[in-house]
Amino acid sequence: MSAKIQSIEAILVDIPTIRPHKLSMTTMGVQTMVIVRMKDSDGLEGLGEATTIGGLAYGPESPESVKLTIDTYFKPQLIGHPVTEINTLRVRLNCAARGNNLAKSAIETALLDLQGKRLGCPVSDLLGGAVHRHIPVLWTLASGDTDRDVKEALGLIETRRHRDFKLKIGSRPLMEDVRHVAAIKNALGESASVRVDVNQAWDESMAAKGMAELQAAGVDLVEQPTPMKDYAALVRLSQKFHLPILADEAVADATDLYNLAATGFSGAVALKIAKAGGPVQALKQAAVAQAAGIGLYGGTLLEGTIGTVASLHAWSTLETLHWGTEMFGPLLMKDDIVVKPLDFHDNGVGLPLGPGLGVEIDEDKLTHYRRKDK
Ligand code: MUC
Ligand code: MG
Image (cartoon, rainbow, N blue to C red):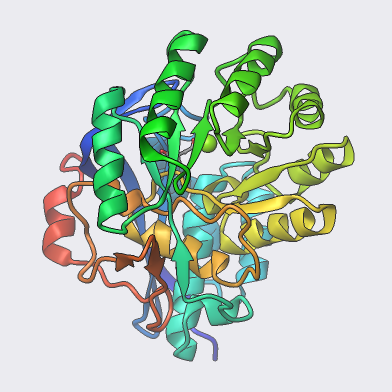
């Protein structure tokens, strides 16, 4: 008889960042993760994570609302049901709750972790098997200070931790941002790829000016320059410039990407398990992108190790990640809540090979960092 889901706990965990992380909509000094612990009737435990950026500054789900959604609405749909029936459980959640993809991603991840542990294989095997065991990872420069960003990047290039960099812009006047980016590109030279993420801060005419300037400065990729719902602007900009656009907030799932591609968008897409509702859902989006000739990029909402590893298992199954990944979330936090942190080396990260996600909670660290009033 198939094991049943016995308990689900959603835990808020707050870990300070190693430095202020300045985005167009907020500056982060702490990252909050919602860690899901799902136990089944055989005594196995599955782990999942839902994380976003800056509380509610980035999107409609906050860590606190994710916990409430799981505790109040998801648990009654899941407890007592066979743990192996992941597709059926997803249907139940989708009937019970629209949207809430961050919360759904944490649950899908925990179910995959459980399934992998049950079968004694890594999550990537459940997804068809890893094509890559070392995955490229860039670093985001977002201290808010040009000299500090250059120093940070040069150190990371020297130790071969990262070779590619994403710069967060959009909070300052456009030409100030352009000068900041150009100075960093100049200092890092040809071998480092420099990309920018505007996080929706520009309107279309600002974006047209910004992209022309950034193209001249040697930038390789511009992420989500315009508001997420302005598909038409993203399509027009992608057709006007050689400098490719990475669609991020505009495309949460496979349907969004289909709609964008059908209206003539060319460029790349940031896949994120959180946006899509889990690793399996993110790979459905990847399949649409592949069919439409849109490049792939492994994105993050700055998850800790559990969410990062879940993403890596999914990205490892993709033959070509045209723009690599940004799965550096654990490195932005001052500490980790797993026993064995990920191994970042040679401008990338190794894929854990143990059963399930291949990560184990450090109980003392979890006790230390979990929010005390919850
Ligand atoms: C985003 O907006 O893409 C990824 C890296 C980073 O610094 O922020 C994120 C989310
Ligand atoms: Mg982005």
